Image 1 (cartoon, rainbow, N blue to C red):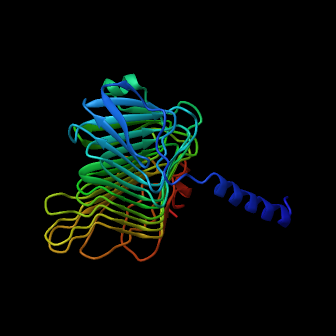
Image 2: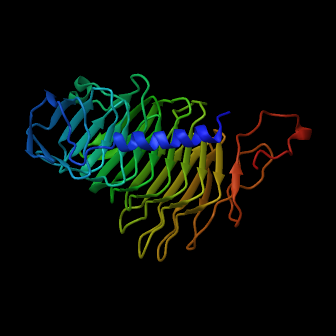
Image 3: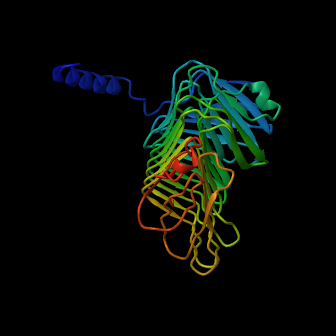
Amino acid sequence: MPSLQQVVVGLLFGSFLHSVWALDPSALPTGGTVVGGSAAITSTSATRLDIQQTSQRTAIDWQTFNIGSAAQVNFAQPNASAVALNRVLAGNASEIAGRLTANGQVFLINPAGVLFSRTAQVDVGGMVASTLDISAGDFMAGRTSFSNSGAAGSVVNQGTLAARAGGYIALLAPEVRNEGLITATLGTVAAGAGDRVTLDFAGDKLLSLRVEVSAINAAITNRHLIIADGGQVIMSARAAGDVAATVVNNEGVIQAASLIERGGRILLEAQTVSNSGTLDASGAGTAAGGSVSIAADNVVNSGRIAANAEGASAGTVNITAGGSSRPRRERSRRRATRVPAARSSCKPATARRTARAFRVRSPRPAKPAAKCASSAVR
């Protein structure tokens, strides 16, 4: 076991390395080569890089893709449905500390890792940030399946990621963490943790996310704030039928409030889902409540889950635990609620309202009838 002196020296050395290798405030992407479609890359100043895209899809290979805190990268695209793929090849993680802007959609792919630091400001029509790879050929052919090509790193957001109305923010990696702010009003915020993830689009709209192949110890964590009012938040860390140990953990706030004609939706999927924060798909004013759905073998809640409404019909909270085909379903009322699990005898748990936290575990293997009274819900 290391001594206290060794620990202190290690911490000091780590701090020294961070100060030595801190990102240059004027840093910009380097070594850009257009390998699909058409685009022009222009340095308009020492701290600004412009990509003028003239085709609906363009693919660019970069040696590095960093944006310093005083720098900006702007994509000028033909329309909101245009997409630019940016693949980083040199093996160093990307750090976005400044501004990334686009009127269309931007894919940033770096298997070594992607960090949006605390000063990051992203304002786009839509964005995918991923350590799962996609080839330029597949992208140009319209395919949107992303795969782990090796030891894929993490995607971490500590800054502000904003999609314009109806747009999307998607973060893909074996480990995804949000410690900042992500917004997509009327659109989609999606996090996929796995070794292969497929996104389904309709024009500039992200409709759904599917984890096709799970990753060992895949994890998604939200520690701050995600807002997709009138839209949807999807967090998936498990492929269908897979039993790998995967986790979705919410310690912050996930909000998909319903707007006048658009119900909000929150969907969390993993082997274990833990909520110690807030999951809120409530409706305000005349808007009906939305829906919160959790699908997991283990569900742990010590926070707040709500799909309420003020002057309209309330929404729903659906919890499917232990692989049961019958979700636990609760109709939310007009007040804030917590959804604990009731005890059962070898049956899927049925949610009911109390003030205490709940833990749901997978049903145990069948036992003789005399012992069946032992609860599968703790």
